[in-house]
Amino acid sequence: MSKNIVILISGRGSNMQAIVQANIPGIHIAAIISNDPDALGLRWAKEQGIHTIALNHQDFPTRAEFDLALQHSIDQFSPELVVLAGFMRILSESFTQHFAHKLINIHPSLLPSFTGLHTHQRAIDMGCKIAGCTVHFVTAQLDYGPIITQAVVPILPEDTEECLANRVLKMEHQIYPQAIADFIGGHLTIKGMQVHNSRTHLQENGAIYS
Image (cartoon, rainbow, N blue to C red; front, side, top):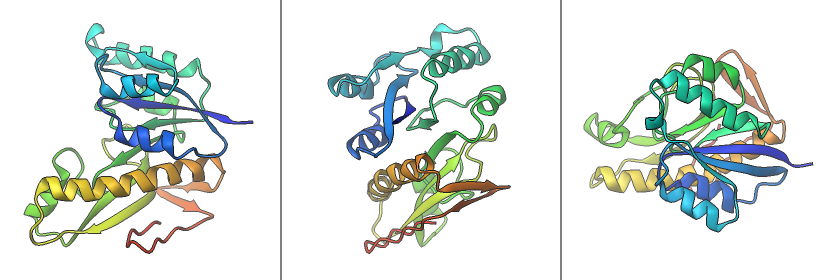
């Protein structure tokens, strides 16, 4: 029997699209939820016949009330996994605890380096030789939590923020569906801040997977 997942987006949802198009065995994408009713990703998901929900955070007087409404919206689908795919909201501790160990995110840096925004330009400005992305379990602390997998790309001398972002995004679209497949397949075990995967992945294109 397929296991439900719910994906949260705020914009065009390119990672959401990559997940849908990956046709991951054993999952059913029960819903796409966005805090922005005008998110382009909602329109794309509707075209694919996926159930969508728009839950505008501006309709709620406090973050706690929005998070509770979001939690209730997700719970109706009894998901095995909740996937943040460009969801641009900082989630409360009560929300992250409610979905502990079944809430994951992808961040465009090699965590724990460069949490927050503008990760690519910061990596360039610091003279880093590599950059990448990280899939991790979500905790109340921003861009923190046990790391599931990472992918690495080189930073080239001529790189702009946009060039580097595009190169990293291609890796995001590869490792996020695989991380979801590994979770649903029961291959991940959390021990403290470490995630042990009974499978490892190393691709010839230079992306390195934990």
